[in-house]
Length: 585
Picture 1 (cartoon, rainbow, N blue to C red):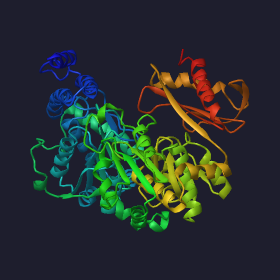
Picture 2: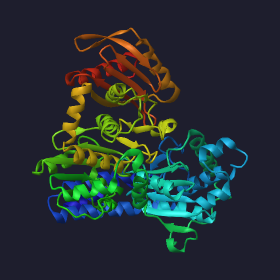
Picture 3: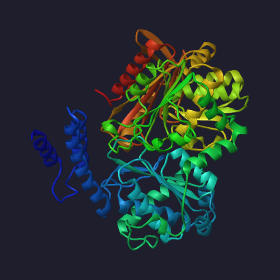
Picture 4: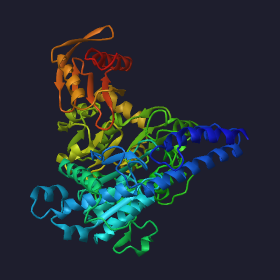
């Protein structure tokens, strides 16, 4: 049969028999998934799927048997460590990183700075308070979690095992259980070949640099030496969770629900009433695209079991290949949600797409897509004006200035740090809303982690309370505070590290007072902000921001125009600036 021959060709092109190091399993998987998706019949699709599963069995073997050094050096950043499944992220490296984390707590007693950053006094307190552990839908997530569980149990750490869960729900579990820290095995929205290891300390938010730097250092040391007194002699992958001493099953969504209820007075979101309103009001339909990720395991319980044909779940079945897409909340991936809503007759519509670990969310009402640039500002306006709460707003420097205009009208402050959710730590508990342009949001009294579920709850409350679709509410806000048209893009570059930073320093030529061309118009740079990269605010309050990526060999640029047609012109100008300093042809 022709398909068998094609499968053999693909496998032979990428896989060396009995040699994990020389095999590129995920290139084979991606090609097989493409062929599966293009199959002409269920029988053909099944043959391709069986080939996908065959290659994944080889990945599983690499994940469980690879004890070599990771392909790329471990480095913990804002969102932990990400790497290739099998070659970087595997049972051995996860065990070593878990031991590295514990080694930090072993040195707490004489280090006040570490005590403050971790929120823990000593190793005994760590044991008592324990660790929340979970994972997203990635291949072998349960085995990787079991590797960490082995290390935790060997060191008599109390374990709250949540299984597959979202980042926001796991963060809520840390707060509700008063745990010492959490381990979340997820690479967030990265493609199917990636695994990840995310660590949060006792405050349940992204860890401080002093902690992530030490995890990086200690992980490398343990991997280099091949041993640690905190590592058990063997990692038992056949171990029953019920037989693990100190392990308790954790319902992360229940912790999330309790946290929202407990802090209703702070943010004004009455979770139970919002869910009941949806269940009893027939004029609202909600479509949720889980892109096969961890959110799919919670959605029914999020809606408290209210079964309704007005709740549409898309891509809610398990699939570690994500159907062959890049699993992120993008405009392209929003298309199925938009199509589903356009077929409905209900006057009110909410559509969302949630990334695999549930920390990013993007919105639509079937007619207009609402990115976090606008939704975060809408959330601030709603909590301040409709819920009658007072306080500042927090947004990263690369995010739309619509929130700035709203805050100015309220005589409230704006906290505008560099990119990264951990940068909001100084105003946690004071800012009503904190959000970033890359689809992350949280609110006062909630988790210090970005959380798609709180975004969904906010959208439901807005629409049910105001009787308006999201785009209609945005239009009301824009009529009062002006229109803002943000966009972002990136370019891959060959330079990295100090060489890249030296080249980017050439952007200093675009100083305050410099005149630049935006299409056929001359604009003057009114202000330059260098908090994170270079943000150049022009005389009409439009702006261009350029910064290096912290996770990829890319330079990212963000723009915001005051009229729709000028958005593309600002993007073009940003690329011209990069060409001027030698990063683009």
